[in-house]
Image (cartoon, rainbow, N blue to C red; front, side):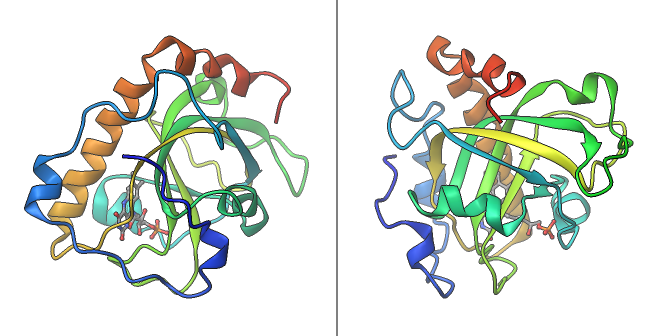
Length: 199
Ligand SMILES: Cc1cc2nc3c(=O)[nH]c(=O)nc-3n(C[C@H](O)[C@H](O)[C@H](O)COP(=O)(O)O)c2cc1C
């Protein structure tokens, strides 16, 4: 699937999201994107983690960290809404207070992530958000701590769903696709990038 060209920032209202069909589900590839990340990737984003509605963890078994509005602008200016993959890393300090956050130790290493950039049509949100699911069982919450993300590729468009189970199934596929796509050497090389001083 190639990245559609209409940048997300030109969408001021929730776009009409297509309904997920059975043929879309069956045709999903296990690996996405070229062998090497291509423009506009890599895209770097960072910011203090915000509280979302909390439905990701409770309803979908997929907790997400919301990035602040300023952080998502760098991404939304060059690409469209949809589901993306890459790496993410939580930093030790709470941005606002400068104090050490609860999330520490191995939780601060770099892990694969999937990110939903958009309007969450299933939940009919009225605002565009960037929600990052990090593939790691965290010991504690990291609200307020800085999150750095490197986005390396596009997985699929945002879709609407007739059931929560169908959305959960697609999110599980997204995670699998992200992990497989990141196994390629040119992608894996970015794991260290996120740990370095870049953002
Ligand atoms: C990998 C991934 C894929 C997602 N795909 C969709 C989607 O296609 N359609 C949609 O409405 N929401 C999608 N979501 C967004 C979830 O609806 C969202 O994370 C959920 O509303 C939780 O948000 P909250 O914690 O702010 O309540 C996706 C989330 C993730 C992490």
